[in-house]
Image 1 (cartoon, rainbow, N blue to C red):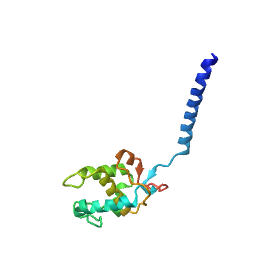
Image 2: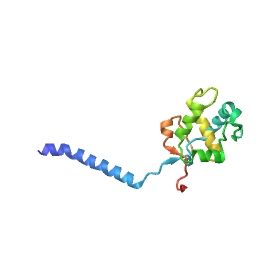
Image 3: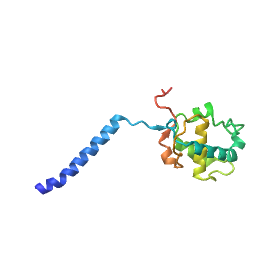
Image 4: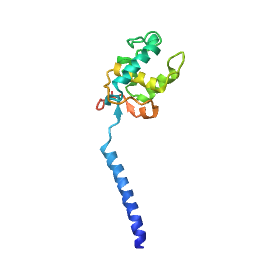
Length: 151
């Protein structure tokens, strides 16, 4: 019986620790990441600007103000569209719809760079690392600044 108890004790203690750690983490309320956390690098945004000029500016204009059927990608148009969204959805929409005449024709890295350029153009701060070209990871990054009240 003693042998049996010694084998179960570490398992029981580990299980109790894990449950406690989860409870503490939930109680502390880890803040979700947002585009305000510096999720792209300046170098990536510069690469994105070059790709944008080559692939997107014809319709959306070099100043990102859009024209005709191509919406603006800056200021209120961008902010209002994405205020409740996430970077994963932005990345996916850009990839599967653009360029209009040949969607999904760029590399994932090029699409991530274009998204980084859109973030810079909309005054989201740069960080130290490139935005990953991974829609699943980017879904965890929202646009709303922490502490911003919802209407």
